[in-house]
Length: 343
Length: 290
Image (cartoon, rainbow over all chains, first blue to last red; front, side, top):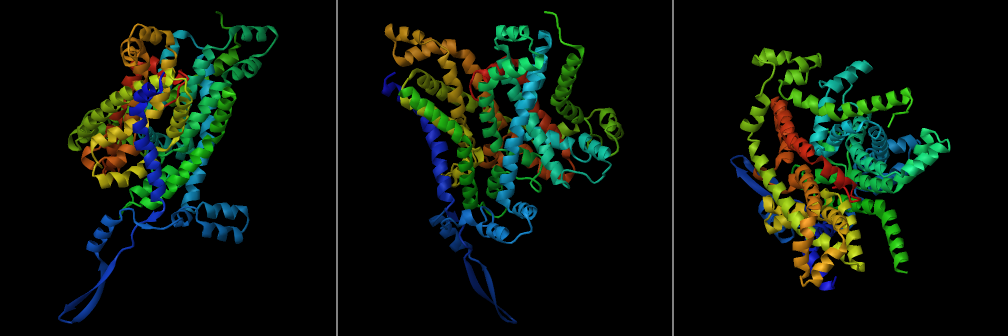
């Protein structure tokens, strides 16, 4: 295809991506170096019948003018990245220079918003991804053994947790885990602890969020693995059986190697999706016990008095760096494969 | 074929599958059922049996089922407004994504050049960007340009965020169509665009329908973009439900939110019911999930 035709065809798509994906990334980087303007204070003298009083208040007119002149705020260098709400350099060095052992370090780091969010985001990524894949694989193996007639309805039901809107799915589960909901009340009954609730127990919040993640991510692995199972070479399977392989050995040495390329693909997609975990935190109202990087950005943007663009920008940039680190192995491998192909 | 698996293994498989199916279906069934009860039943501290029998519902309304939640959500809180907005947003996003995406995907599938490969890799990186980080980049410029809060802006943004995935998926569908088809059309004197429109597109419909489903799902399920970029009056369903929740919980009308959530779930169920095969084939096309 000639270059000109190629660009004519891809132009609208490329334009959309440059305008609304590339430019915002630059805009976020720029924003992260600014902070909101300080309030301009003026002193007004109020003179009443009982003498004069000096009153300090925010000069709204001057503020509006300043905002119109410099909407991004005032330049702050790297201070957004280093302050307590982000990398918290001063606090972290204080923690490491003076502490009571690793448990103390961990507990105090978890009090810093950025590290708290990072810890949950990574935990969600690296627990949910393998567990959901294992669940999906097991369901795929099981579905593969049932009669053809039952497979359609089974697949239908299995798709539901994936297709559901993340916010809606997490709301549904959070109502069930409410102390007055069926699962929440059941848990209280089982443990004999009438005060057990998501709000009161960080451990339970984490467990339920991870459970939600596995529930909603499992079906994707299931569908991909199930499709992969249909193309397992039957003669290899037969000859393995002939040679006396047990069922488990057939799975281990024939089926799993066959599904390996698919598994890499699933793992990549799921890691990318799980790294941006956000809606469950809103749906479960879990912010007191668990936050994620995406939630931090959201929280800055919807904050009560005025949106904290600088702070949101700094968290966003660090999140993007996280995504790139996550993708690095894939990008490197593609790069190497590509160069080999050319040579 | 005779099932030669030992009984124990068969029992284990069936049992496991049953547990999974219950886990997948029960939350929805429970919530749909409970949405026709009063709050004292659905959130019953005494016994979950209340929610099944509707003891309190009977006492409060006279029947075992009540539409009070739906009435509160749809009529009192005007849930139909966000529903119409959602309809507009999802239909526009799906159509524009497909139009732009088929052109781009076709070009990527037919160009063997180096840069086509790099566009695909860039799209992969873009696909991994958390949406909320992009949103934090939009807000200030959109305020400045005075285009914040309206539906068209949101539609364009969702189309753009959708593009990386759409391109990948359509690209892999176009690859499965033999090159000879458009080449013979070119030999017969078609221009590239004519070949694309009159020869390739007619055989691409299954791929387009599948990709369209995923574009629809992305627009429908989105919370990050729609909740930040739309003003109160223009909100779509999902952010509406979120903002609902805070205001309603104080008034003790959680059942309104439950009814709204069930209303938002039904279209998805219908979609899976009718397009199950396309969804499965889309996920397995070696493409990328949305």
